[in-house]
Length: 346
Ligand code: ADP
Image (tube, rainbow, N blue to C red):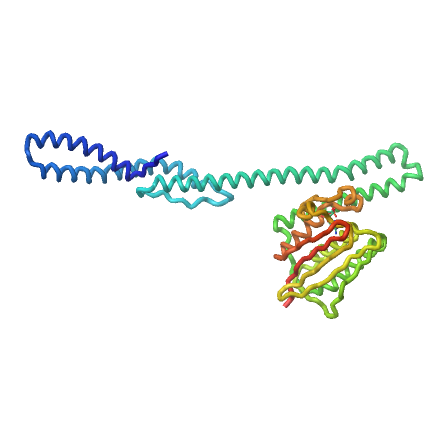
């Protein structure tokens, strides 16, 4: 479609007016025979009327478009107002069209973002209720059996109370993990940076996880334990959570007589911590999803081990809150290796 600028429109309108005037001048010329006067007055008329029409046209367009433009300008996109200025220059239409097209693009992107958020919210609520449903129904079942006479049966009364407690523990860990994720995502959880020895921290985690490792016959080892402390600058409590989670997963998803090895690599500004296991591994197609909330390769295996599917998601959030990175490599049946960086203490 051909677009007209106001300049061109003004030129055409005045052109038509001039032709009409020339017609009358020529009629006049027949009467007066003064050609120069006819030419000068024609040019003068064209020039003046061009300027007047151009001015009126621009004013008209600006007045009509201003309210629309103002509405668009005042509509915030992602909390920001667009910085548009209406001018009365000759390219006002082209200018407006460009700005409105840009505005429409931003709005479409914003709508897509909101749709994604809504999808995520629905999925999240669905996942949470699904996760909580199992322990709640289990508790209901045990309590009902106990109320219906089971309480007096020594064969099941203690067992069912223990199972009830296990289900309550599970609900507590889901709720605690959800709380951590919400705080980390909203930026509410501040990192308390301090200097500490990462080797000592891993040793402490090994101690905490030793019982589970013994149960599963998995060895927890340093590949080459540094002789001197390796000092880093980070939130000690949160990094303990990260290492515990990775070591705990290394044990849970391992094979009998498997190993969980921890190594440290010294870089200029960073320390790279590697947690490698000789476990069941993760399929290539699932690998990019392991940091997603509630993602589990094998749901029943994870639940059986008390997993919530939120651990790695929390781990990633914590590392990112430190402005550091975490990566994963894995081979089915051979094992999985997680590496993350920490800032070296000065
Ligand atoms: P979960 O509570 O289920 O362990 P995570 O977020 O810690 O949740 O891990 C997500 C999923 O990633 C696990 O369910 C498991 O399928 C897989 N996974 C995590 N760590 C390992 C590992 N070291 N070896 C094999 N699979 C793993």
